[in-house]
Amino acid sequence: MIGVFAAAAKVSTLMVALVGGGMNPITLMAKNCIFTTLMVVLLCKIRRPGTLALFAGINMLVSLLVLGSTVTLLVPMIFAAGAGEAVIALFGGKNNPKSPLAGAAVYDLLSKLLSLVFSWLLMRENPMLVYIAVPIVFLGWLGALGGLFLGWRAVKELKNAGIIAE
Image 1 (cartoon, helix red, strand yellow):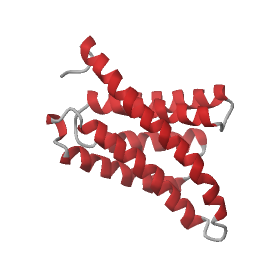
Image 2 (image 1 turned 90 degrees about the horizontal axis):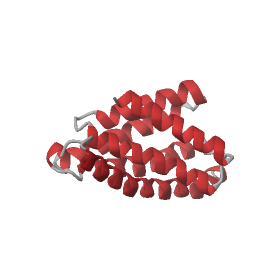
Image 3 (image 1 turned 45 degrees about the horizontal axis):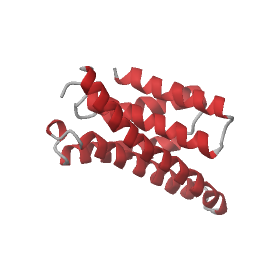
């Protein structure tokens, strides 16, 4: 199930990027919104420890193999997933229905911040290149915030339909 959600997230965001014409603000926000929505639904469907870390790992592996993404982003994603898992556990895990939402929020925020930090570490000779990326990452984060809201709404509808257990 986690692999299916990871593949669906990657394929849907890739399709949005291809249809939207690349790096424009609307496409960037839509990609992050779809990704976060699917992640919230997955975390509410599978309420076991390690789900977020496995989802992030599979997603990064698909990015490496299909899209040629850089390996340096693996460390921030796994660290952010671990922090998200910790927040889910601190918020009550299976017992608190909002813990997946908090974990997804922490994962989104930390993964974006840590990717900027790692980019800055790699681009120390010319940090202006990283400064240019900050507004782009911020727009992606705004899309992820929208995905948190849409994910929560989707989970409520899927609970009403009986697809996600209470």
